[in-house]
Image 1 (tube, helix red, strand yellow):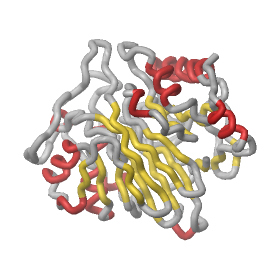
Image 2: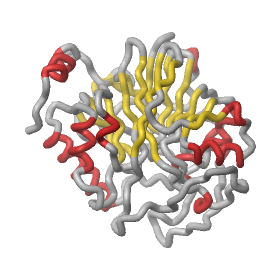
Image 3: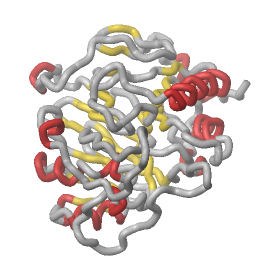
Length: 325
């Protein structure tokens, strides 16, 4: 049983009546959320001013609508087939942006937050930024890759961790983080870009490029921490204490004590949302497809969160469902 300090106790006590809801339904169980999905057909005029909604786009991708502003985190909608889930994995898979999938879902965006630059997090970002005019925040690698795609430098903001960015009705704190490692203790497509390369053509042209986390604080609303990979530099989490944590599922055991260190560093959030558990090379349709081995890992993750942080509610999200924290 983890210890809980007085600050955490008071924070929880003040929120005992708070509910996680989706489409107006309570969603407090550790099973795939059963709620009416909010589709891409929803329009900004359908939201009351000041409302905050979170929609999962699979992998580590999110659309967050805050009043009249939209923040995107790792928006990867093309979901191209690389053979990762069916084999063999093709590292020379062309980067094919599916505009027919993106355009109905991305009517607007003011900010794009990139955790790292692997294809399943970054490849759709340049197109989305060009389409919406959104400002892209990410590592120096993300900055140089953005230039390689023809984005103007005035639309790109390089960050490294420690920055607190004020957007008026919400703020974003950038947190230095780490990428998960595979069973061989390696990172897929390692490396950084210290200058603009030729425009990437295949998934291997998009390296990890260092990894960040982001803490979104909404005035009068929740504070939410977003991860994009399953490792953590827990000393960088001191004092964040988010209400909600979007936590990438671990795919290997080579990163020691991942969940204990992450949850303790985040002061045991009230709500934990597993992400990056789905087969992200299939259509964006509910229920989210999960490979058999990943289903086992997801169940183990839920059990581990319950054991490590019994006061946390686990919400397993479905695609494009509007959640309100």
